[in-house]
Image (cartoon, rainbow, N blue to C red; front, side, top):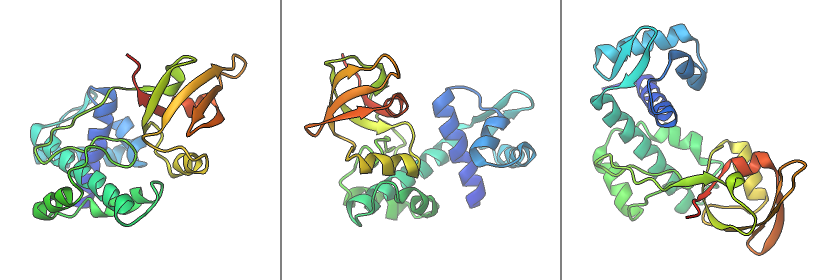
Length: 219
């Protein structure tokens, strides 16, 4: 059985690999885990000895097939627990991450499969991130930043790039949620802000916010 620290490292490498689609450097892992590079190196050696990662000095880290399977399972548990907390216990989407971080280490596969069925097999978590099924398959939707679209485009909010508590609370305050339809009215050339309509209400969205709203691709 792996320690929680080992599982957290596998999940961090999985996340970074998903973003970079390549070998992950120890410095990136150190930033993600908010720890020293030397501590990362020590942990990577342990994971390598357990054949969970493939590591070459100065070349970075990759998950092995075994490591990826475990990491995907952890991600699945985390996102299912987030769904449960939001959908069944009425937590807000900015409250659930830290709780799910604790619950994701539960080892019972039967419990997680029952949880999945109880939730009616959700494909996405409250933040719009895909949930792996029990076989580890992930169905990904094509998403683009709202900032890349043009006036008169109409789209749907599918997820967020920034899932920090602060940003999620900001969106809740503005009454912006996953699944909302968005129509772009115009762009402001001076500061690149956008005029949009969400839930029938006109809003001005800064460029920084627009870059962090992931929407359905216009095609």
